[in-house]
Image (cartoon, rainbow, N blue to C red):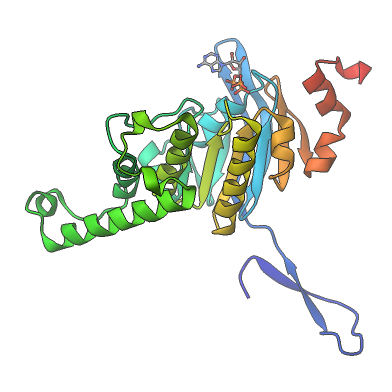
Length: 281
Ligand SMILES: Nc1ncnc2c1ncn2[C@@H]1O[C@H](COP(=O)(O)OP(=O)(O)OP(=O)(O)O)[C@@H](O)[C@H]1O
């Protein structure tokens, strides 16, 4: 039995086991009372929630709610003014970005950041390179270990391009890919670092409904491979179909957290999205 499960005694019935296994949620990322100020602007105000292993968590909210700031704090770009963030039980604060990547967190960006003059395959190989162990000497002299890692890196990159559905475009320069293909490539590159947590910042921005549906399928497939997913999105309808739980921010504060259906029916959330004052909701 894994450490994410525990047993509890249940009344014995004919033919039924005497104990039942109850899944225990294992915290992966803990946002612990985080406040983040930019001068006079309070971008995050005492935000507190936990992301559990294996789930797809949606972080939503209207424009300027603090989603990206929260994301940047989680990925080590911003330091909280107060509170702290723990990933796999360790504080994020003070860690460099590559250390956080090695701890198992990967992200994509709201504005696509690829190497435009590199092929799709090369873009993904760059991500996989983060895990290579060979030294500079070994790489310079193309020693066997380096060659093996290079071959494995390429095979892995091809598998990931296949997984996100653009293997047939692997030799194209990133700049020649369509917008949707570039978004998929970003995801493949993030997956190349073997993350346990994948953070997606508005991955469906600019997508038409059919592309959005395909993306949701891909996100589900990613979770099914064992990767936990954090999805930032400001289109509430989009996240309803794919997330297990949702955290809602408005003006830097958490205004709701729960199952998609609970969040959807929450008057505070409805008011935030419709722009209705709280007391009128
Ligand atoms: N670097 C910064 N300096 C000053 N203020 C900032 C900075 N980054 C964000 N803010 C402010 O913090 C608040 C939250 O912004 P943030 O970008 O996190 O919101 P968001 O929910 O991601 O919005 P959007 O959906 O429009 O991307 C806003 O008032 C924004 O103007």
